[in-house]
Length: 427
Ligand SMILES: Nc1nc2c(ncn2[C@@H]2O[C@H](COP(=O)(O)OP(=O)(O)OP(=O)(O)O)[C@@H](O)[C@H]2O)c(=O)[nH]1
Ligand SMILES: [Mg+2]
Image (cartoon, protein in one colour):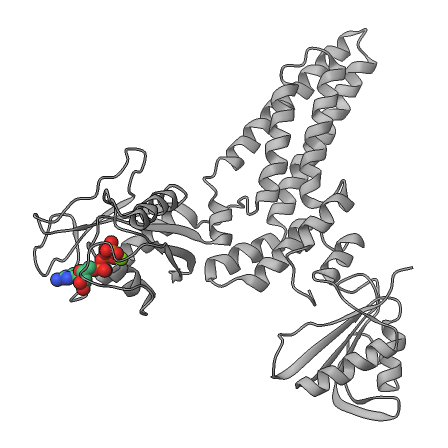
């Protein structure tokens, strides 16, 4: 028998309203004990709540009997005044009533275990809670609406049919039917492997939107990289000075560029330096550029200024010439001193980011999904080499299981711990 859990579902700290949520078989009894009555299902009721003869607060009560609830269990909600003393008195009462504080993500986990949500929708809840920008919010909502679940479940159904046909090929291997079924199963494997490959080959679009698009600002010392970071962030994050080699560590800020979360990094100026600390800074700058989605090379437009020596494998997405107030340059020419060209550069960056990462088609959003799909693809590619129907069926089954793991249709227990460990309490 499951126990009954409780948690603060609203944010911590002082607030107008605090929402305390209970889920489990004891939720109704606990609510009755505190409020003296059980409200009608899904109807708000204003009541005084008390424990051991002491009134705690007055608030709204909600009662969602299972299975028609978020977790599928009985759920009660108390909307109380959001003060610390109120919360603590309610928590103490719930503990005394033998309810248990929820673990992070435990409500969503129960919803998955009770078949109310698949794993991709549960992950979308966490993403909605964490969404900082419009693009993140839209992507999470699409996923919550089942865009990914439908895609992956569709693939899984296709693979289930293919396994069936491969098995039929084993059963009817003596007559012509076997061959027909074998070819059909093989054709599905080929078709699926193409679709999955295309989905995997999306340059990490969904993951970039979810986790932030990484933009690296590189260039020679003194070009104005730290000035650019400060201008983009609209605050004084990095030290700016006329001493070449000021920045050593990578400095990171989170920007909202047209609704997309961009993580911009200012880096050490690129030059050969005998100074071990500066040389380490240059090493870090290049490493950051290598793992970036977008590289912005900032040069000093003054012809006499040094140009950065960039390794051949680093191809900038954008080359920008700074210090236009001193010497304007062909191409994208800006002055961080006067602000000339800055809004044009911002619009350009925004355009690049949108072009490369935004979009409405369902995209892969998590490394967990990528791992499972990569495994499915390997199994499908192996399936295409199979000459015997037994081997084909086995590989198709592996692919089916890998895809099923994404939505949680198979091996659920194995993936639950992994998925819910990043959730916040009360979700
Ligand atoms: N005239 C002029 N000076 C600028 C402009 N942008 C930045 N500077 C100056 O150039 C110097 C270097 O600027 P930083 O932003 O520190 O340059 P950086 O590329 O971060 O330099 P390092 O950290 O040493 O690699 C500072 O004195 C800035 O005030 C500009 O558009 N025009
Ligand atoms: Mg700097």
